[in-house]
Image (cartoon, rainbow, N blue to C red; front, side):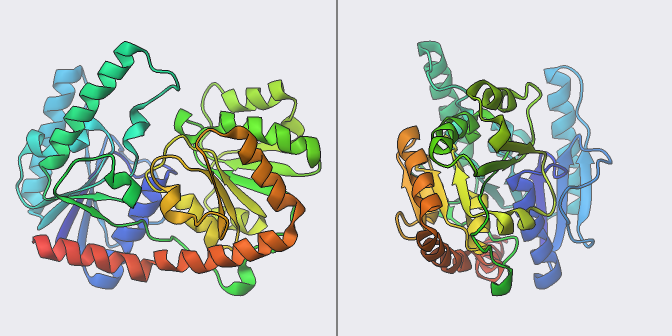
Length: 366
């Protein structure tokens, strides 16, 4: 089976890159796929995550004005596809150009689209004006048109299916990137709360910091660690200073050994406005760490069983979010109970359980 992934870049530290490294490597190493990955303007940038050495890489260079960019992009992809002659193409690009790719290059073979984000990722602020709402409506319509052109459209959760009106949709969750032995699980004894993800609008760290300020009024000896790509304006670092909580908030750039950070944490928090899945939730759960998340569209509700292995909070309810953090801080036994349930829940996302679903899909199309 010759499989071509088309994506933007795989050199970053995001969830899409992490998941692709797991899937592509497993298909290559364990199921004997001939995997190719095509990137855009990546050049020789080194990769953040580990990919199998058996994978073949291709890169398209597209520059210039919008028309030149489009022509170079289309020409580059078509030339590489002609050279590879793949059995199946799988597109991992949450942008509009990825969704419209069957219209841009045609369909030289069966094509799959992997949606890693909620539609709401297109929303960049809380209160949309009338013009913004119109733009969003047009954007969503174009996205639907592109999505319908694919042979199979893959979303990560049942919640994601509600965002699309499609006949070609299937649900395949992300696989875990690691599953530690029992002796490696978090002790849940450290006064340490963890969040992982970039500092973009959708991750909602402004909401998290407001919640954390309330928590510190009761538990001033606890700390919050945030790992993820920091924005140029450092707006959340500045917000922590403005709220007077900087001494209890530590902001870090992405690290490759994020596993050690889950092991050191006693609570995991997700303050996102929207998620395609919530990879960090199942990773924290694998280490026996209970999770608290806003019930945002569309991932957390599929993962967290409220009050059993974590807490789901009404999206944007900062007061309740902080209250549940306090509940877990003050009750070690509750942390332990929820953490054990979380660990059990995470097993369903083991690589050996998820990748065979992809194998069946790809072979059924070729």
